[in-house]
Amino acid sequence: MLAPVARAKVEISTWEEALRHVRARSTDIRIAAATVQRAEAQQRVALAGALPSLTGQAGYTHNLIIRDLVQPTGLGPSGQIQTKTVPTPQPDFVTGQLVAQQPILALRAWYAIGTAGVAEDAARLTFDDAKRQIALSVANAIVGVVTAERIAELNRIGLVNALARLALTTRKANLGGATGLDVVRSRQDVEVARATLVAGDESLRQAREALGLVLGIPEQVGVPPTVDISGLEKDARSSCKPANAIDERPDIAALRTRVEVAHRGVNDVKYQFAPTVNLQSTLSSSAKAFDFTPINPAIPNTLWNVGAVLSVPLWEGGARYGNLRDAHAQEDIALQNLEAGRRTATIQVTQARRGVTVGEDRLRVATAARDLAAETDRLTRLGYQEGRGTSLELVAAAQALRESEIQLALREFELVKARVAAVLALATCPW
Image (tube, rainbow, N blue to C red; front, side, top):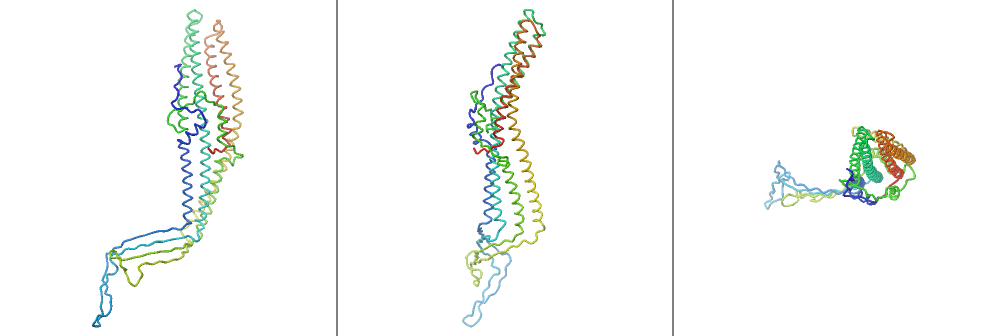
C-alpha cells in the first residue's frame, strides 16, 4: 500500500494543452457552437421572407366523367354544316406553371431580419460565456488533481509514520516499557492511516476522471509532478480578458440581448396587424396529354400575367391579441432573468474577490496549526521514548498531525482556485 497510485496514461502539463483538448473534444463547446450556427441559419430564414420566391408546378389530369359535344367546323361542298365530336372536358391534359412573388410591403418580414440578427448576437455571447465557464471548470479540475495527488502522498507519509510508531511501541513492549493496550492502539492508528490512504487514492482516481470529462477524454487524465500549479492564475489571465463591469460579462450581456429579442417579439406581433403587398407573376401552360396540342384553339396555350395582391388581416379569432399578451409576458420574464442574473453575478464577483483574502487567512491559520501539530507530535514521541506520556497521547498527536498536513494542503490549493476564480469571475474568454 505504500506504492503510489500509477500515473495516468494521459497527462497535461500546460494550460494551452488543456485548452487544445477542450477545443477538439468538449461536447459543451460543440453544443454552444452549434447554437450559434442555428442562430445564423435562422437569420438566413428571416432574410428569405423579404426576397423574391419562385415556385414551379406541373400536373397531369385525367377526367373520369366526360361528355361528347358536337361542334360545327364549317360548310361542306354542298352547303351542309360540317361538325365534329369533342369530348368535354378534355379527358387527359397536362399543366405547368411558374409563380414568381416579390414582397413590396412586408413590415413584419423586414423587422424579423433585425430580430434574427439580435438573436444571433445573444447566441454568440452565450458561446463566450460557455468558454468562460469551461475555463473555470478546467482550472478547478487541474487543481483538484494536484490536490488529490498531494493528499495521497501525505497519506502514505502518514502510514509510514504510523508504522514507525507501531515499531517503537512494539519494541517498548518487548522491553517491558509498554503494555499490550499500547500496541493495540498503535495498530489501530495504522489501520486508520491505511483506510485514509485507500479513500485518498480513490479520490485521486475520481479527480483524474473528472479532469478527463472536462477535457472530453473518457478516461483518467493526470497532471505531471513538474507542473507549476501557481501559474494557473497567470495562464487564466493570458486566455481571458477582464471585463470592466458586470454588464460586460458574457452571460449578463447575453441576458440583456435576450431582453431586446423579447421586446422585438412584442413589435413582431404588432406587425401582424399590418397589411402586406406582394407583386406576383404567373407563367402557365396547358396542353393535351399525349400530343401536346392546344386544348382550346380559341385560348392561347401559354398564359403570363402580372398582378399585385393586397392582404389586410381583419379577424382571425383573436389569436393576435393572445400572441401580444404572450409576447409582453416573455419580455417581462426576460427582464426579470436579467435582473436576477445581475444580482447573482454581483454576488459571485464579490465572493470571488473576497475568496482570495479568505484563502490567504485560512492558509496562515492552517500553516500555524500544522507547525503546532508537528511540534506536539515531536514532543509526544520524544516523551514516549523516554517513558513519559501514554500511547493514547502518541496516537492522538499523530492523527492530529496527519489531519493538519491534509488541511494545509487543501488550503494551499484552495487559495490557487480562489485566485483563478477571482480572475474568471469578471472576464471574457475569446480563445
